[in-house]
Length: 432
Length: 185
Image 1: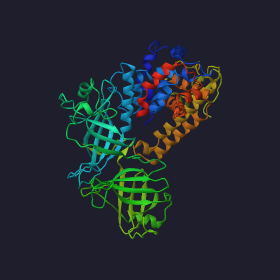
Image 2: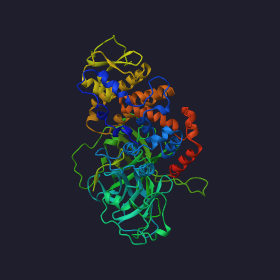
Image 3: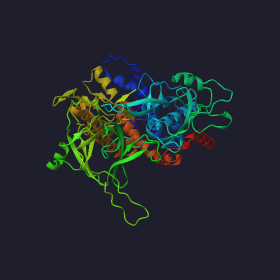
Image 4: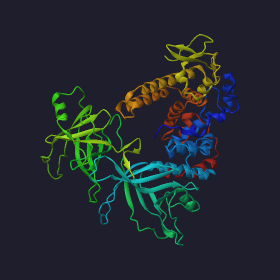
């Protein structure tokens, strides 16, 4: 979660200073008037309940819903802070909703609405990030629909999900096309509403890392659906009914599910970006040997190893990944590098797309090097000893100074350079 | 140590080419802090811009031991910001390992600062950060309190923070019902 303005952003300091003449040469009068909030005097054993409301709001926005609920139930002061109409906005700002102009959150007209608002905000926050569609059992489409979805904050306090795909088969760049998918917003009631275009849908969690997107139940009286879907119309339409996008599935007397949409399952791509401790981790993109842009997922396991899998959009029964490289030892080679290593790198060609503009520097500054293997050891469970895997070819990862990296293998004179798909939660290099 | 005690009645003065401001704690002790560090406090920034700080800035709500920590935080963050501004790779907007590492190091420093505080001192620092309007310090101190609450029941929270349960039994039941959703999600 980004360090943000927290609870403070809604408070305008100038309004607190309005009683003081800004030209007043005596700073003591400004300092004195700031003492209007009910805080304990410094150094006299301040209690939690005596902390200023801004601080209590800040603390509550840092807590997961269950922890915030426990804190709220501890004493009246915390309960009062939790019921503050300022809390939903403070939470929205901490969660990274677009900055002012103020996000269009519905007003928290009563504590129950405020609680639903908080619940919705927490639910939307859990959806943020990258998700992979699970293969469907039904007949596959051709061409297959993209299986990578990105949920990001959008204007008007909405969460917009887009499907990501390489922008074109033979383009030269690393652009990613983005097509609209689900839009989620918060109704006047504080509940979440979701739609794909005109079609209301439900987005329900199954655990924390699995969601199901399916058409919402249609009112049997045949109530008209909204045509066109700006968030405000969604607010207006759903404000007075139980939201189809919130919480548990609501089947039964509500009747049939509309739109003929098959339920789609997505699993979270956790750890989609690298960290200082895990510089290779994340979802990456790069031009591969056949000059097309591909996505690669690199993960660290619990025993100190790293694996890279190519993220595919096939509708096969496989997981949607095909292995690319792995290593059990993530100890990097540090500079100064041997001449052999430097020659190994500089003698290779960086794979580019067909139309790539060759301007620019080919070889980049390497900060560290890692030894990798190009395939998995294959182990048959019913055999007592593992089979030899003749495809086990050694390779290298060259980690560049800017945090990206390239990889290549013995016997090949190419390097596949990878870039981040997202940075700080934002999808990079997108084409709409 | 950034918080130097200076001469009595010292005006905003220059030390090694850097403008300093004098602050006076609630218990009468004087501290100096660089103007760059003082700018992290929205309150102090307004006061400095308003002028007339020749006799120092009194802070009747901040005791000496707390002000010392405030100044440590502000000087550290002001220096880090100055270093980042002068780093050419940061200026170019590239996401280098160095920039991310510096940010992680600063966060680690903040955590070390708040972890070394007693509960009393932590709360006093929260009050001071709120009073002086130092968003980053308020965030760091509130995070510590939030971390202490994570995974705890209401009773455990009361015990840790020495809070009196001022709900009636019926009110407690009602609260649990109203927030039952928080445990379902």
